[in-house]
Length: 152
Figure 1 (cartoon, rainbow, N blue to C red):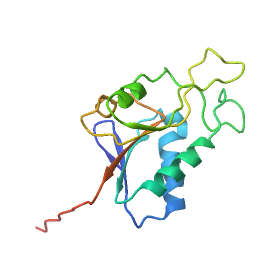
Figure 2 (figure 1 turned 45 degrees about the vertical axis):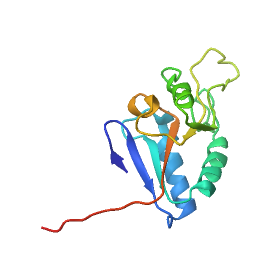
Figure 3 (figure 1 turned 180 degrees about the vertical axis):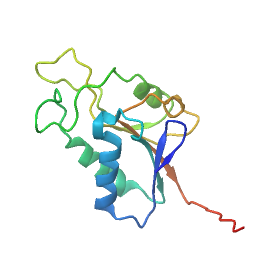
């Protein structure tokens, strides 16, 4: 994980342990409703990521959105609704999981967003540039990663 100007990034390499990594991604991205300074909002997949996408969506769909005070709550209310999801879609990101239409019984006028996953996000998109995004994973795909280490 690295902090990139209020956009914390996680890097997933092809040989990562799938279960451990998915559990860490869910906790880091959706824990505390994603409204904390170290929430992970961007995951960078290196190599083929199709199987990761499907599994991440499947696990995120299983998270329970409630008023937040119930013992089985995974996600509670958020400060405000998120307009940046539509910006991402308008800019060409693929919406793998849409959490904008969540309604919690008894709290119909509340601010609730379910887990949302945007795929194919690029650094020039508005949703990527704006630091005020939560409960939304922005997925970036790289075909390869080249690291250079200079020893002094």
